[in-house]
Image (cartoon, rainbow, N blue to C red; front, side):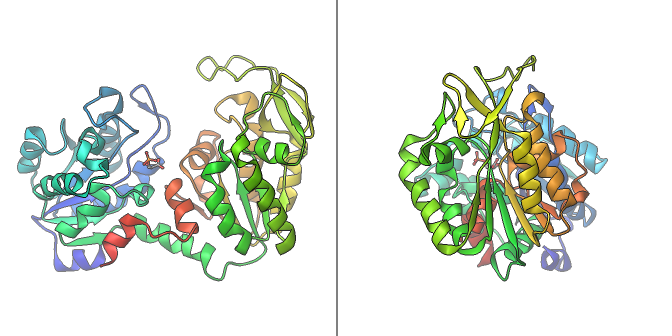
Length: 400
Ligand code: 3PG
């Protein structure tokens, strides 16, 4: 983007592909981290006199207008952060978008409606995606890719559009890639990784990568129970992916061969039912040993002893990467495991990276100071796929 700014953007229509996919409770944004992260790029372009068109997806609407997935709340928040009015187009490439862009004066910013209201955005058909990218290209003179959270998606606005306009990467993408490079090339050791989240199937490729690089892998979240079952333990009614058990066994064996320490919980919080996240009614969990979960009980967070164990495993790490909450942190009775890991990252003198939409949201929702971490990534799937060594369409498109 620096080159673009040096060449001059005054009076130019600059399309910024951001990731404003923020969690919403109705129309209330519960974590605005992604908007704050991209705001400096937008502000800089506006200061330089560009007419800035911001576009993003939000959620996974089914290719049609759906008010529950409107970007209007994100546009309003962006306006607050920029301290300037932000225009909002009620469609993405239609009459409203064209009129809104035509009305922009130099230095003004507009947000167009959710890219995914248009089936062409996510289409697997190259021609259909290309046709939508052509329409998007008609709105702008230049393209800035800064939606790091979506660079792993081969979508029209991420992959096809940059080929149609002079393009550059924004500050957020540059920062994110710079940090993740530190975890792939010459990582400082000991390198400890905390992996959480519900499904082990989402993490297989990254575990594969980490078995070659990490010194320690600590496991939490719903995927723990597939590991415990693979070791032959009773897991009651906990979440499990039976079909992943052979893969998990193989990883545990490979970790042993390679001298990678795989650490699993020693205790867990269990209850008969999944908690009510709306009312947050007290769930009265019990703490039980991880290898003795009673029948009819499901594990919903790591236990306090595990929290202390994991903190001790992170205390001397020179580099820590954390992806995925340790439990159902949205409910106060199951937030302590995630809190313990977040606190351990804060206390660790090493360089800590929080990767992932959910874990990033968790640290903010639990009230941690973002500056206490080395880096909080705005990309969940994107940061994992980067670490897996995959070619990310949104980065590849900006490189040429
Ligand atoms: C994310 O939340 O990880 C990104 O915004 C991408 O969203 P998606 O998984 O719906 O493509």
